[in-house]
Figure (tube, rainbow over the protein chains, first blue to last red):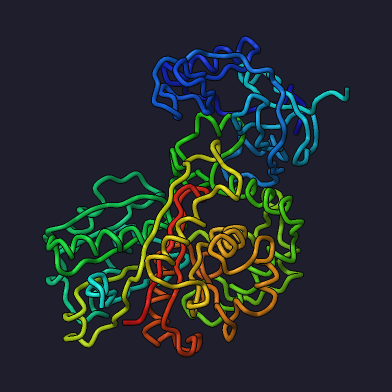
Amino acid sequence: MSDPADLWAPLPRPTAFSATFWDRAGAGELALPKCDACGELHYPPRRHCPACGGEALTWTAMSGGATVVSHSTVMTSFHGQDWTGQLPYVVALVDLDEGPRMLTRLIGAETTARGDRVRVTFAEVQGRRLPYVTPEEPA
Amino acid sequence: MSARDAIVLAGIGETRVGRLPGLSSVELQAEAVLRAVKDAGLSLRDVDGVLNLGPYVQPSSMFATTLAEYLGISPTFCATIDVGGTVTGMTMIQNAIWAIEQGQCEVAVCTFGENALTGRAQGVQGLKMDNLLGGEEWEEPFGVQGMVIPYALLAQMYRDDHGAGDADFGAIATVTRAHALLNDNAQMTKPMGLDDYRASRMIATPLRLFDCSLVSDGAGAVVLMRAERAQRLNARQVAVRAVAQKTTHNSAAALPDIADLGMAEAGARAFEAAGMGPGDMHMLALHDAFTISVLITLEALGFARPGEAGALARSGDLSLGGRWPLNTHGGLLSQAHVGGMLHIVEAVRQLSGDAGKRQIEGARRALVSGNGGVFSVCGAMILEAA
């Protein structure tokens, strides 16, 4: 299942803080919190810097480039009928070029491999744009 | 004898496992506790410490006091501990030792069990474990739910690290299945060869059905007390030489590389505290929610070099009669998934010399491992017949 037109997912239930992440994604931008004090970028977003505890964080746009760390093609869903229509789908663990690791889903390809270059892309699910990855176009 | 040796595991209890419709989680835990207390030669009235982990399949709070009320006892130390399914057992034991050492209680029971197979909410296919990994906002929108996919990501990493394949993963599944066939209280009763493993259906690549542990109803329990009392009762006496734990993350969204998981540190600290090494162990009771868990743990604890755990399993060293028999009760993969409790029960049983037809001759020391989440919290415990 890699046709973006058929994507389904339970939508996130953001906190007041994390809502910015999803709102920026909705606008087609992957933005992560960067600590004003120590410069650490982190993911998943939280209100306190996990490197120094700092509370002054600036949402910072990522380039969208990433490299695959691991992946799994999900063949069986134990989590309700809603997922059945998505099978098979590919979950991808990627390292963003800026450093943070992100768990997401690969779309636009049947599979991937460690070290593959991907880029963040946004696809609409139930009226909301979510950040996925897709293979980087050949140079 | 060190101060820690003064407190021993003196009783074990295990319910039937598998499909036990109509039994609630508290009833299962109570049955395991009653059996463990009787096994130690005591009665419930002697129990003044209760430690447990609440069920994952139903929402619960204050489950240790729920259990105490059910049992009709009034403990002076009561606590529910949750650091994840298979590391909680040894963490309960560590807390029980501290409580007894500090005079908070004299006889402590530690238990976990639930009706995970038959007690799930109607219409829900997967375990109802909201916030299991604490990261559902960052997981569910991307199709990551439950435990299989996080472990599949680790399994793919392991394959890419070492060029490992079905023969390595299948070796763990088949070794533990062979052991389960020697356990009358096991869900899996048919032999499994590598061909059977390969023929099992793919769940989430590279994990097949036979890479995954069972879903079970059941419970296990242990009783701790001072060694002098256990001697007077002529009860089992298994000392806890060391417990060590390491937490590195929680959710699959924060999954590190295999080399950065906490099991190596937990194991090294446990071995150091006990003054022992892998060569001193006579049996292994390792977390095996998935075959990949065992491969990673064997290497992190120093029983195999990186990438060679599958070869170790194929060599026969992990089978009964080998150097380090692995999960002689069948483990989570082939006996039942009751957290880590039945690993601990089995280790105590083996070190007490009453494991029947699967007894390891001369077994005196056991390494027990557990983890919570996706190797998020790792623990290692070393037990020795006192």
